[in-house]
Image (tube, rainbow, N blue to C red):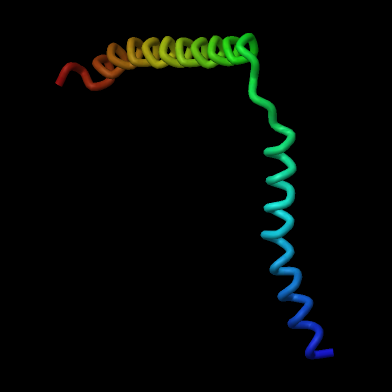
Length: 75
C-alpha cells in the first residue's frame, strides 16, 4: 500500500502537463485564420474600443481639473 501511493501521486502529477499539452494541441488545430472580412470587423471593433476609452479618459480629465481646483482652492 505504501509503495503504490507515491507512484499514484507521481503519475497524477505527470498527467497534468500531458493533458494540458494534449488539450492545447487540440485547441490550436481547431483554430482557423480569420478571413479578410472577419479581420476588418475585429480591427473596427478594437479601434472603436480605443476611441471610446480615449473619450472617456478625456472627459474624466476635463471634469477632474475644475473639481480639483475647487477642492484644493487654487493653493
